[in-house]
Image 1 (tube, one colour):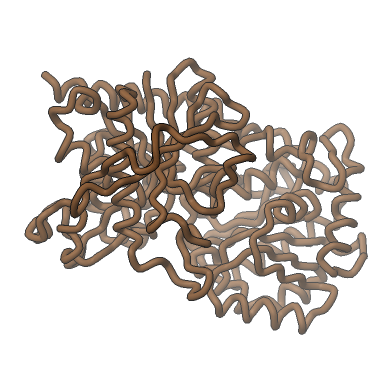
Image 2: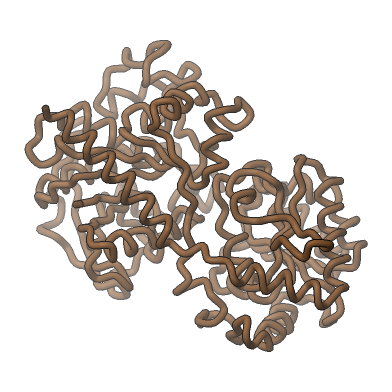
Length: 497
């Protein structure tokens, strides 16, 4: 099959969260299985042309994208690092993408107000590029609300196009909480009449427009990034954000699937990780002890090998459970543990973590930034990894943690349930500590259980070994995506009959 995968971020070119890791890894596996894969992302200012061997395709402004007029954009390409058979295309339009931040203005700490117009141009631009390049896609795989409009444009404006009309569409929801909501008055800027936003239509969401809803409505198949999350968002207003109805329709038609994200073990495996102080494996764990010592030194924690070290690498947001952490943080430290946190997000949690580190010097380290190397150090050097999410579509860090022998403590939601089984001391089973309710007391109890288990060195070694033996590589997930692509391509062909 000929597959186009489009995303607002793709590792290693542009990275904000787990979405970039997924779209950086999946094309490699799909290509390795024998399919023809192209990847599209915007050409942001921070992407290094020399590092990746990026070259222009045609002249500046050669590609004309329908908008209010014909918007001139430029097209670039390079091979995917580690998978030269995959071609990465970048859409350049400096008024929209020549900025310091990808989604958020570093000066205001807020999202760019023209977000929907930026990604609408990208969505229409990638279709125009596919036409000019004669990519003849069988499948268009779109990711989250940023690229959702490409599916709408495909059906609305390219249904008779000889290059694009037969393409089927797969729309992946990595996080339903980001809905891409905007005022219907902007619709004419995107190529649609404002009257399309009427109650009951695909273009209407709570009085406005949601690009994510449009992505669902216009796709042949929708998938989420874990089986549990697919059930949650289609079956409950708590998780569905008002879209549980349209998602249930897709589910009942057999067009909503859950496919667990995979892990790129060429990057996230302590046996080969070149970013950590010392490599290690289940056969030789000495390197983990050195990683723990070096992590403490780097982050200003007290050097005490008898104290368990809990790591967190996360967006600092309510969704990620930081409101629970705020309620019982001192109680957690009172259990005799250390805490190292890496991430950025809501200002209240920046202030909270700063204050907590000052209150407990040597026991709490707050690293309020993005640092990929330090993320690897925390995975390798921590004893436990805390993910108390309110909801979690998939989560990657708990899977990274398992491979690094860092025992996850998670709430029973989304992909966390699909990947972490609760520790049972009597049976000698389980790979982590799971709590059910979104409640700070339950979280504290799970952490206390982990600290108690940590005191039994043989039992803890068994916990680590079981987790490190699990395989969450992309191979199984890529096979599931390939099957979904096949079904979507068949849907596209049926529309031609």
